Image (cartoon, rainbow, N blue to C red; front, side, top):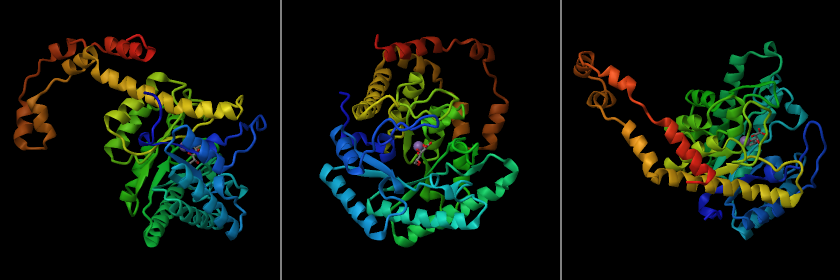
Length: 386
Ligand code: GCO
Ligand code: MN
């Protein structure tokens, strides 16, 4: 029941399972893993796809012939193992040239070099059949707030994304863009700190229909937000292209823990939202194994991410079939003709009618909603005693 299948559309970044356990205080604890080995192992454990930055696969200084050889080996590994590429993206944060940002660097040559790097990465994504191309601007931001004009930074980001949308159209690629928000780390403060900020920005683009978002659990929690609420707004806007799943304790550094290992209620609410809205995008794990693990531990981590999602999906179904829980929800869902008239659009008649209506305020105020019981039921489902 909890064995991942292709149709679950689980994917992992090359950078996630290849993470070597390096942190700001300590060296790597695991050896490197080749992309083709990762593809083989991911297929073995039941993943549907793999995601990558340009430089997870192709070294930044590779020659044209090296690039072509690496891509053809990787394509062969994908085909041999029946794995898809869920998304591709550009590393615009590691190289020292991006120390003050890519699209928002003060140096125009850096901004232009970033466009070159993205176009090359989009070509790679297209060659590998990636339907989505992600933008995560880890270095787009500041420590010194008067070093940049922040309105100008927004404008420059718009100019870059508009240009790149046109590039995709011009090449005839079947690719959409997805913007990933994070409030800080590695910059002191990163621009477009939440998915909500991204949604506002997308509406100002030349081709808003080409661009969506991929909220990440850890990033929204770093901003002290409720991930299920964030996802609700993205779904409503029809902008949830993909999602980055992981685990995180509130308001800390970016922990990128195994999905479901923290905040079980939050993870449940998120899976419940995705499942009840029949989300069809890929479920991408952007997390990594603890520093204590060897390679076997990495695959324990990866299996754990998928298994936890599937367990929570099953718990969501159990909740949807739980007679007592459903009875509580139903009894709180009270229909009202006046509201139906509001929802179907304005009329002077409805406005008049509502102004002149009497409401049973006391009864409405005094009704107990039984959310204590509802939460206990879910808790017991999650703890496995119901
Ligand atoms: C992070 C981000 C990245 C991005 C990745 C692809 O490190 O905080 O989550 O892992 O997801 O660069 O966009
Ligand atoms: Mn991410």
